[in-house]
Length: 472
Image (cartoon, rainbow, N blue to C red; front, side, top):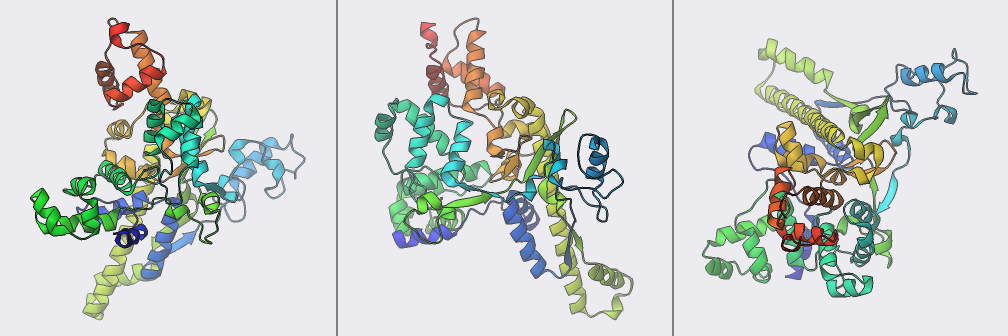
């Protein structure tokens, strides 16, 4: 069993709704991080001679596209700031030195070397946005006890004892940790790791019949390839079981922290494993308003090669000059290039729309900090934009955004945080005409687009030191 499951570690989740090749391709492009997108474009350029990339020359100071060798943005700033700076005269060439970087809006985050962020550091950064400050020692203890595979290497009782915390508090922090990226992080065993990933994929619109049942009750038999026994006990065909096995190998990863493991294999791999985090989107503030920029749109332009465009036009005008093989070659690669470019453009537009919506909903968070983070869900954003929730999930999964203050955070930080939910619960209770039960509070939260279970409401209410409805 171990040998078979270890082989799964090289299979990363392939997110996509198995509907049509075009939709699969669009979803695949949408879900890619900035680094993965660069790798995908590089691979496509090698495979498709009809696709061409043009690097856009950009200003090293502000990132604006250059006009020749001059940055019009910096030139305007230089003229307006000339009286305050000891830099060159307004008639000289635009100056890109440190003196011009007098405000945050002139700072180009992409000119800095990417910050090296370890997995524990990243997890703790995300947890600080959703965990109450007095429970952060629990979060730090749990994150500090993740092994090299991403599994929790301590018992919850031990964590509660070491942190002098209640069992319910430890359960809550663990449940929040297990919502973080990579999916499956913080699991206590293989079964829980795979079940967490199954829940994640279901939010992306990906589902496999009987996968949950087989993972939940017959994982050992599945690893031993006892398909017939599983099929007999669940009253399904062996083909269904085989499909689940293929799904697990293709979509799930039994070692979620593998991508952060040290390739050198040092003994301190847990401390040295890291990833380079580059923002996929930059939010800047200019003249009192926020602006959204999808990073790759400033860096390159994709187009169909002029040579192939000309040949394609010639084929349409005078096809008799070309053989059937030549026609197929031209049509295949030109069509493939146009589809790839369309998917890239659609990705940019979708990410831009979603980020703009987040900026609109979370403007107070952007300007005043995490304490002003409003309760928000992906479903609420999807409803506001008129798109599917899975589209929002794909567009924000494993992606990072740079805030106006220069901080780089995961997109998940924009969405429902426990601090914000507690504020809403407290508001409901303060304004109640008759004592609200936890179930009624959960219903009122759902009306605001915040979907949490009754028991979660009870946990948050107890943390707020508010008595149950029967005692209020």
